[in-house]
Amino acid sequence: MRYAVLGTGEVGRTLGGRLVELGHEVMLGSRTKDNPAALEWARGAGPRASAGTFADAAVSADVVVIAVGGRVALAALEAAGAENLDGKVLIDVSNPLAFEEGELRLSPVGSDSVGEQIQRAFPHARVVKSLNTVNCRLMVEPALVPGEHNVFVCGEDAAAKEQVTGLLGEFGWPPDRVLDLGGIRAARGVEMWLPLWLSLLQHVGHAEFNLEVRRGR
Amino acid sequence: MRYAVLGTGEVGRTLGGRLVELGHEVMLGSRTKDNPAALEWARGAGPRASAGTFADAAVSADVVVIAVGGRVALAALEAAGAENLDGKVLIDVSNPLAFEEGELRLSPVGSDSVGEQIQRAFPHARVVKSLNTVNCRLMVEPALVPGEHNVFVCGEDAAAKEQVTGLLGEFGWPPDRVLDLGGIRAARGVEMWLPLWLSLLQHVGHAEFNLEVRRGR
Image 1 (cartoon, rainbow over the protein chains, first blue to last red):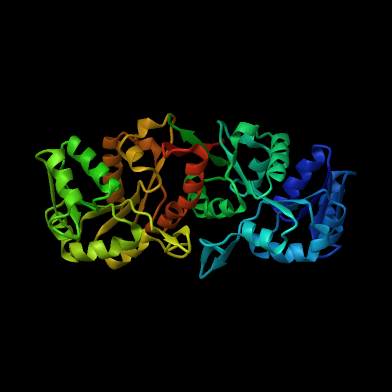
Image 2 (cartoon, rainbow over the protein chains, first blue to last red):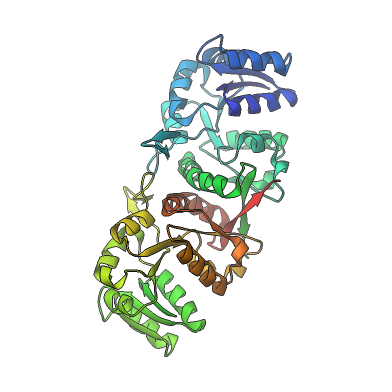
């Protein structure tokens, strides 16, 4: 498969690197053609890895991964070009966190989410929100944490969610640990998990933790 | 111990009933003296159970449990009277959920929480946010769900959190499953867990579930 990974931060490079290891072709997309982090990543990640603009990455991709900060996700996708996204699976792993008045806060929050914003702005894309609830090292190596801990998918397109669940399986998440939360509106819940995740980060002292949903009956 | 449980809904009656079973004296508080749900609960729960106004309940209590909806928590506490809350442990188990534009939404959300609102409005009370992350049957009977699943405490007063951790132990939560998230600001995170909890309620099909924090290293 050909993946566009939009975003050259730790999340984008970690996801891109693992996708290359799994045999996929990956272009890391950024605002500019000569982003140093992207070029260095591409040099180190081997022949199936390349770097380019958001549009360069999206145009030839089968699947687009949104790994920029949630507050700039729409801008990155506009730069990628709606015509390069139509009909494609968009995996949104972003969180709309930023410092405001000295605190890490989410925006949008409560009555909207980045997942929904993207699906509204690009109605012909097949948006699936996933993986934003865990640290990026854990995204691609769930065995770092013991137990049957979970990740989530939500989105309007069942086939797209199935495809993403398959990719999660390549990363090491068995299908019974991928919980389908329904339509893209459920992105609110997985994005609003972040403040509790940040409290737990302080409590645990590192980012290698995750939640496991335990059930009675 | 003498507990005031403010709120006569399922949460208040479930917590009050379990506290009576554990040997405590409990007055269920409501807006009016003759609340039918409270009077019926008191008749059924035995000689250590009684019913009265918010102020009746708070005045003679050692500990006050806030089991009304989060959006009316401040009003209930104002009715209880600041002079009846000073120096006491206030356990806030509430969630500020309500239907808005056909959807269940939180308010406050993001940059504030009910836990913080209460601590600001009643600076001499010792507020501890806890238990709001699970269904009320699970609050008082964690063994309904298998595994080492967790509850949280947060608040400004370490001794108050210790006292609440002791009460959680009486309910069946061992101390190592009670995670201390720090100051009352962490109430934002545990309140913002609710949208994901609601998605999981739909996914699981019933309310007997909880999250277990799994850690690597």
